[in-house]
Length: 382
Image 1: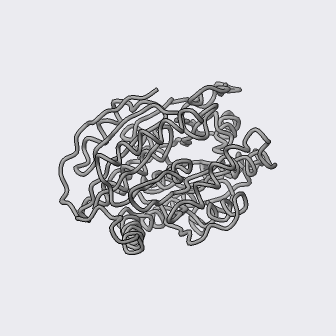
Image 2: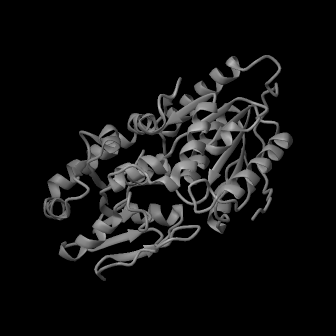
Image 3: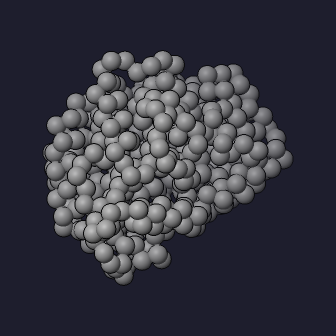
């Protein structure tokens, strides 16, 4: 089977796409990943080149949620169709919405990792303003054009239906991470948080704000400037230690060291970083929102995202109580093992199989191919 997968290079979708591709290799699946957003870093190229069944085609087209993206979105559609004509995929796996309406030569699967409108409602507490009307129309059209829509949590699927109406035949497939990538290490007295500091959804700024009041040092990994322009984040104090953007290997090292991982998110459709930290043996402190409750209830500790005092007190209690910290970390680690890559790959193979059996006669590209070593193919676009 051959897949054409789209991925942005800005956030967790890149890690998700690589993890899924690697997990699909034992199933004999070849994966072409077409990237958009920012250029791949050397670390990202290295990660991709280590996966035997992956081929990368790179671009820098703006994503549909970026400022003034629409000319790029249209050009990216032509580019993606050209790629499909070359790689002849059996399934089109889109990690965005706009391109689901294209005249694809194969069945389409759209994975709804997040969306601006549900982000706005949960972060701003209001409906997105009129300037997002075209985005709303584009996403709605993509959702209803796809052969199947996948959400990474029931909460995200519910959020989609609030914004865009009922999505027929939608499914929930939880993300997975390879536990071997995030080994537990000797724990140190430190608190870690990871997230785009410019993104109010992650609410990492709240961690930055309470850092001076805690007995342990706080480290924050993540970018301070949004891609495509916009306001950058400026820390209000100098107590949290800012690590900047880390690659996967560097992040795994910090998670292995950290005793506590905190993500007081206002909006998080799944939360790969929390899963990674739990695999590395961290005690999780998470925002009390439906998606994170769905995934971590009974294991992690929760805090209202808007309550800075509660966040400080909960973190300080964990720091002071070795037994509580150890029991929370153990419970989170057990739960994290449920979100494994084999389970994710099996679920997606079921989706792909259903799409292939439902496709009109003659639409499929036809044969199952063996796994071969991927190469670096680069198509640069502006």
